Amino acid sequence: MEPRERQTRQRDALLQALQGSARALTPVELCELAQQQVATLNLSTVYRQLNALQELGVVTRVDLPGQSARYEAACEQHHHGVGTHGEQYHHHHHFHCTQCDRVFPIHACPGTMSELAPPGFQVQRHDLTLHGLCADCGSASAAGSTAC
Image (tube, rainbow, N blue to C red):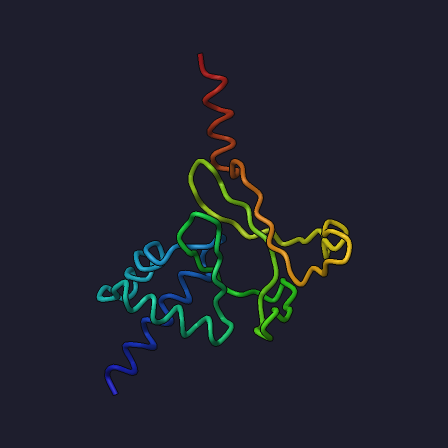
């Protein structure tokens, strides 16, 4: 019964790290945060747990072109939809800070985007990522530009 308890502790530590973060996290970031509660947690266990949590619909994978996958806790604030293969997905968008490389959820959607598709095409889903400076990096940049 010990392995089952350890797995639950590990899963709980990952969930707490995800829910306590206001942004999507890499597996390495998650591992480091969760190790504060379960020191023996390793990266392969983090990946196994993330896969299981995705299947349960508790965690969402965030993919950005040219970047490693990040993960975030699913929240009730977002619209849930059905993907092209019948899979459930958690619909919202993201902001990627080009300076610190962090990714934050955007709790808004501009709509179906059907009007952007060529005539005769049918939009089944869309992904939107804004790129720029987050509040921390933007204020640090503004503070640095006023220095003599």
